[in-house]
Amino acid sequence: EAQVTQNPRYLITVTGKKLTVTCSQNMNHEYMSWYRQDPGLGLRQIYYSMNVEVTDKGDVPEGYKVSRKEKRNFPLILESPSPNQTSLYFCASSPSPGQRGTQYFGPGTRLLVL
Amino acid sequence: AQSVTQLGSHVSVSEGALVLLRCNYSSSVPPYLFWYVQYPNQGLQLLLKYTTGATLVKGINGFEAEFKKSETSFHLTKPSAHMSDAAEYFCAVSENSGGYQKVTFGTGTKLQVIP
Image 1 (cartoon, rainbow over the protein chains, first blue to last red):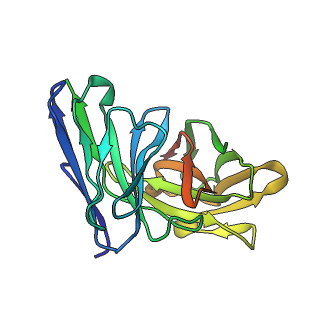
Image 2: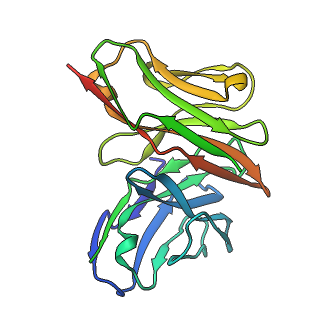
C-alpha cells in the first residue's frame, strides 16, 4: 500500500531533550516536506527537500533540523525542544516538486513539550 | 506572495443541506488550487485540485469547486451534506517558486453536520 508513515504518533517530552520524528514514504517520491499544524494557523511548512541531500527552509524553520540521506526517509530533528514547539506535525511527499504535484500526508505526530 | 483566506473557521449544516466552504486566494501568477480534507486523528487527503482547463472541478465524495479568476475564489460545494462529511477542510494554493512547489494553506474550516 502506498503510504507515508510517521513515528511516533504521540510524544511527550521535556524541554531540552533532543528528539527525532521519523518519516518514510514508499512511493519513490522526490519531494518531501514537514508541516506543523496549530489551531487557527492552519499548516505551516517547516522544511522541505527536493531530493536526496537537497533540503531548504520553509516558513517556520527555527528550532528544527532535517536530513535527507535516502530518498524514502526525511526525519525531523528537534535538538532542544521548547514548549512553543508543542504541535501536530505532518510529513508529506509528492512525486514532483512542480506545481502540479499533489501531496500525500502521513497520519501526524502529536508532540507535547513540557 | 501568495496567500489563502478561508471565511469561517466553523460551519454547521443540517444533514441533506447544501455545503458551501469559501476560499479566496491571492497569487502573482496563475495558481494551482487544492482542497484537502482532514478527518479526526488523520492526515490530510486530497479532495480535488484545479490546475488548468475546466474551471469546475469535481472531486471525491460528491464535492466540487469552481475556480473564478475574476473573484479570486475557489469555493467548495456539495449539494447534500452527509454525516460522514464532518471534518476539517483546507484550501491551498501552489506556485512554482525557484523550481519547487511552494504550497500555502488556509487556516481551515471545520464542518459540522447536524442530524
